[in-house]
Amino acid sequence: MSLTIGRWRIDRYERALYVQRQPNPRCLECMGTGSYYVAYAGDPQADEAVIEPCGCWDPFSSIRIPIGRTVITERYPF
Image (cartoon, rainbow, N blue to C red; front, side, top):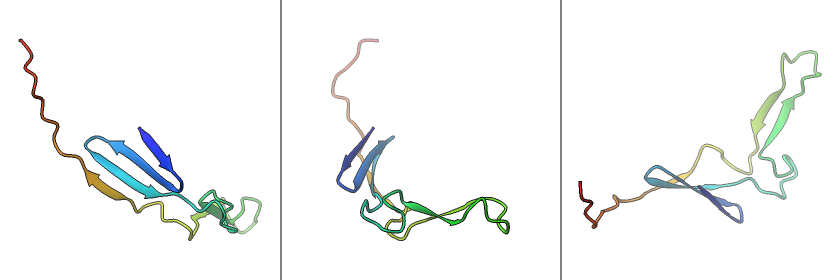
C-alpha cells in the first residue's frame, strides 16, 4: 500500500512505514524521471546503455518508521 503526497511517497511494508522523496518533476537533467542516460546504446564505444540516477533525488535513502505491535484485545474461541 502506498500513498503519494506531493514529492513524498509513503509505503507500508510489514511492520514499518517507509517515507521517500521522489524526483523533482521540474528537473532539467532527468525531466522528472529520476534517471538519465550517460552513454546511449547506439554509441560504438558503449556495450549497452548506461543509466545513472539524477542528482535531484537519492533512490536509496528513505526514512523507516517502525510500527508497534498490534495488540489484539478480543478473544477467539478455539
